[in-house]
Length: 217
Image (tube, rainbow, N blue to C red):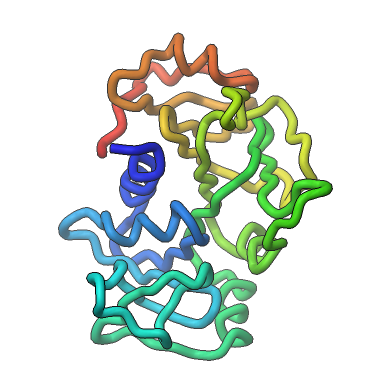
């Protein structure tokens, strides 16, 4: 199981029955393929869709059905499509129960940076800012370290912020943290990963929950 699949599978464990969930492009949208059995959620895509499904089988995709990242999706019976303006009415109106967004960096204060690397071309903000302040719960999903092994879970973000103090949960390939009033709390560790290894790979300070669990994947 690779890093991206670990994160996507763990994201899907956040889904609660009946919840309206927005999934950011990349690893969050992959989570639509791993919805736990018996869980029914209304997935929202910011480009204008409610109740979309997982990725179609090879050769069965439609050029007219895609998520905000341009990836093909399925639209099962009961789903709906609408224009971008209406989609953002849903987001800005507080009707999204939770959003899961990818991140470049997060920090121990619940800040998130996911839209800009100075000097490099990146897609930009998109609907991220609206989701970060409009959704009732914000979950950040990212690799725990960069390609050089540097922590992406920081004491303080170094890149331009997308929003401050909004993240409630952080999911990486090796750990799950809750963002509490007094800092990060490690609540889950990936199978085979020790608390000591997580500590060594994390710049941010954190406490360990007395009820720490192993990730369900």
